[in-house]
Image (cartoon, rainbow, N blue to C red; front, side):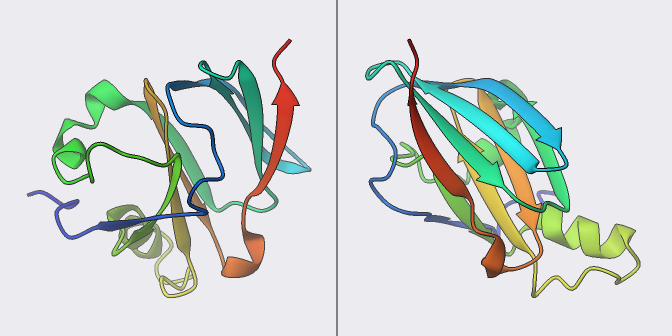
Length: 136
């Protein structure tokens, strides 16, 4: 069964990220939250995406997301999307026996050339924060 076929993807903050190829540079989870460093090759720029409080995150090589890729808006013009009707949120609600309210969970989907990063947060008061850094 294809759980991803009904998901929709809405770009988050259109035009915020550089165009061109990017890769996951690093990911760290600490008391300060989840920090994802993305390297944009054309601009030789490092962008840091921070989530203060996360419920779930995962990183999967894009080559292992073949079922989902057939439903994505290709080419993906942006770096971060908000996923509606998320199968990952449904799984979280199910696994938590309802302790997580699916209507309050937001699924962010970050796309790089080689990785797909999913992050689920509890509400829209926990939007990602983005910081630009020079890679050199």
